[in-house]
Image 1 (cartoon, rainbow, N blue to C red):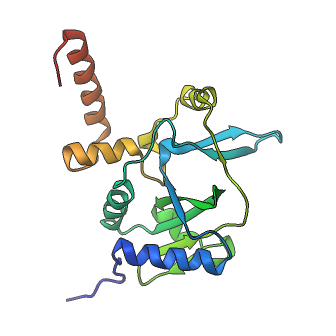
Image 2 (image 1 turned 30 degrees about the vertical axis):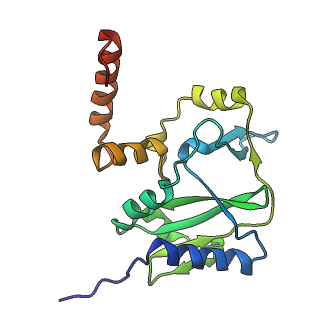
Length: 192
């Protein structure tokens, strides 16, 4: 019987290693987690560049969102990355990522590898990230047509809700059917 190449630790152990990594880099080890709906990319002054911000006012993550995302990502063979975007309110703003493409990222890219866990840490550099609380800036992001479930590397809060409701992420055709049923219920005045 072959042994697995890596073993994922409990989330508490991974978080302890992440906090230690941040402290070693001189960055805040208090954490604030965001998800796809919380991330805001806006055009910057320079052509073909953007500013990264976040919001939790309009779509706040549930307390168990990180646990659920980590559990789902841990069921895959893809690398999990604890990624720091910046500092806000004396906390490191972080997002959990997972994708086989991340296997190509190493120390030259600023990643600290834990291959025995198939987890990487990317503490980034010191610097602040803006928390967006202006609804018009948030609405502009929505109007650009981004589907949060299609966020390539991260977990969407809508997917967390699907897992809580259905026990798993839905397939795209199931999402469409779910939306259509919701619309039909509203039109018919049927309570969910």
